[in-house]
Image (cartoon, rainbow, N blue to C red; front, side, top):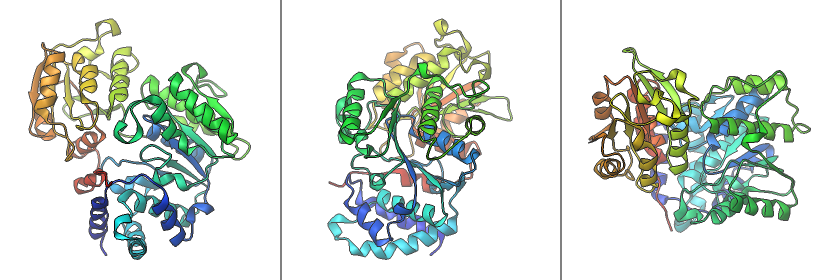
Length: 445
């Protein structure tokens, strides 16, 4: 089997859709010799900030000298991003080997209970981390928590970043319902650390922690981010990232008796963390500045809006852009451009409402996904919200980038899928466009 053939095999698993439940993953793990039982985990769930918090935890523990596995999703460009050890992507040859070894086990399942893409990939990650003798695995949920394929592990700690509205079709229409799904990762013997501030969601998490008889540690903006010697210079921008960092630090300190970590390692880990596509500034050879940010749901778009208007990132924004104005004057003019692409199953109207007022020109691009919101639909919404701005429906992201080539500052946002495509088109990541489609899924009921 070649690497392209292995990727095609994983593509074909998408036909089995998305299933919420643990039966398949437990069975796959048994067939593989239960590799998760040889590993230690920090399990991370939540609506937004999971990936950033995972990246910070990984960076801190790696700075402390541990061999750390990192499992996240979706990937921006290449499938190999999902499975990393000490921030090194799994190699193509290892992907091939794991696929070849896993494939025979799939015949053990009835056709109507065939493992899904995510279930197979979770098992591949567990096997790889065990083989690599990882001393700790930072383990991100895919969707929800209670019935997520990642939930077969017994973690050292359970982390819930926050509870916002996303994936309501599967997780529930209230914060209480969504929180109950996320709180499903809470296990006996593992403390819970959360930055959830919605009272109704926090009550659910607190009740679950009491039922499991585990301590609950709450992290807020007031918790601060100080370690011995002062506040680390966090390279990830935005106040929401400072809260994610505080959550990561609180987790490390809760586990200090099990895994000791010095303040110096905490500082070094935070100051060197990398997590592309989240408030990531890019400068082109022509002097143009771009800002890439997933902002893939309403809460994410609001965080981007606050970052752009708060003054926190103003030093990197060209003065010719309206985004460089003080917060009380952060409004549209001809000096700012926004390229927006959103998935139709997201709350795209709220995303438009948060971001459209900030730009003088708004270019709507399709996301490279069968679930994309039509650009003309987004254009109509943005025009209603900001009738003064020029709004353009583009046939592709490449066309939108071409039309904004002379703008001093361009924000590209609305979907991590769009950000991944932008990274390829801008030459920031080796091209693997065919692998971005692996992020696609549909529900198999």
